Length: 189
Image (cartoon, rainbow, N blue to C red; front, side, top):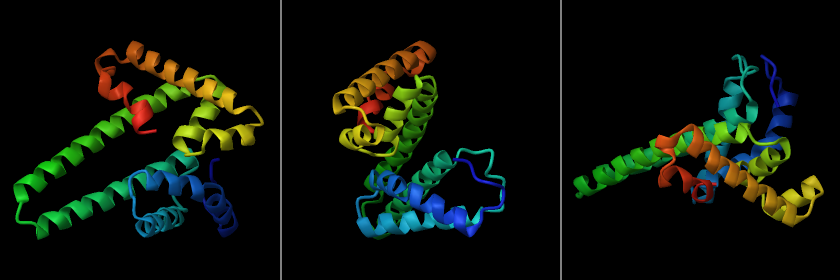
């Protein structure tokens, strides 16, 4: 769904009801505290509202919302880490953890970009099933009901999509096809 240059309240409500559940599930992948995750969800939609006059029509809305939710979750994690550093006498060990967190974030972003590129090359049905299960957090049963197909078909589409993505990354990005990229298909999604 793309939004017009000026987002009106009715359209905002429609966007909220369409995306809030999947955005919340995306946040919960990184933030385990339910209250904090709800706060971040609220911040995501406040950000959308505050940017409603900007040129968002050229951007896929779902991708924009997922990116903002990811960034806000990472910002929260950074803030938490910084607070722990300030309170801790073990600055060196925490600094090491912070650097690992930043490295993890960079690796995660790279993996996400490579996977997103590969997903764009999937067949329409595989792409739809993969996005619903892996990006939006629906279960196989939920996807099967939504698409009116069997759970076995959903599993097959996911298996085929995962295989295609692995092969695509190995072919197009041989230097990045090491275990850290291939393992992310299951671990991060």
